[in-house]
Image (cartoon, rainbow, N blue to C red):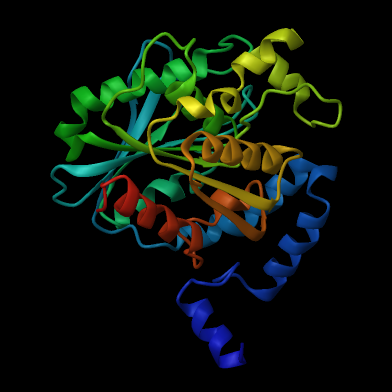
Amino acid sequence: MTDDDAARADFQGTSTFAGLPQTARDTLDAIGAVWNDDINRHRRIVMDIYGPLAARAPKAGITVAKNIAYGADPRQVLDIYRPAAARLRPVVVFVHGGAFVRGLKDMNEEIYANVLWYFARHGFVGINLEYRLAPAAAYPAGAQDVAAAVAWIEAHIGEHGGDPTRILLIGHSAGGTHVAGYMLDPDIGSPPASSVMGMVLISGRLRADLRPENPNAQNVAAYFGADPSLLERRSPVTHAARCRCPVFIAIAEHENRFLDVYGAEFHFRLAEARGRAARFLQLPRHNHTSIVAHVNTGEDILGSAIRAFAAAECAIGS
């Protein structure tokens, strides 16, 4: 690729870290190589890099309604990002991560709102979902909160310009666990709604494990329980063959330990059951946090891939 080609790709958002200065790219490459050595510090670095970039993204023509209750618990709230004059637009629901015991739909003023600004800019009604946390709300509470939110969306999203029959669920990290649990786990207590046309699992913890090398093993135990005999049945990967909707799996090159492996395992089990592979994308150079923090900035590899998936496989193009 020539220098002109590289510059053109960067402008169009088709190169990794597009829109970032070289110093920021170098920083992300450096922490990616040692990501698991200090996940919390590295996460803060990523947020500091991408927050200002997300703040400069276009936001005109989008209205936001904050902290609408979908349940009785204070954390059972959601934000709605509505494009101007939206009517019966497809709905994207984003479920954040946080290792089951922490996390907020607004990690700061821009992230994770950046994901919903992005989809609202592209004609979707965006939902940023909060949910209850372990240990107070242990398995299967996270998946049940997704179920409660979907039921609320089906009943009320029409009032906000959304189409209650066309919903795409996106989950990151523990949020991916909860989305997959809602869609697949037979012990959740209710079947998934037919309005959910597909799911996107980004860096999801799709297997519950207490391995000593897992930096979040204690948090996994806080949500799933510490009894090893229960973990296999409670792991979304165990139920991959039950999946009846289109699936997009995305992982980062530099993941929290084992999450890339579990994403690949889920992909294999799903392909084995269906006889064909689902969509799978590994984002080079990205880490567990930047894989979502970069959305709605200069790089549009993941966002455009999700939109293409929604249009081609879920019949919910904007």
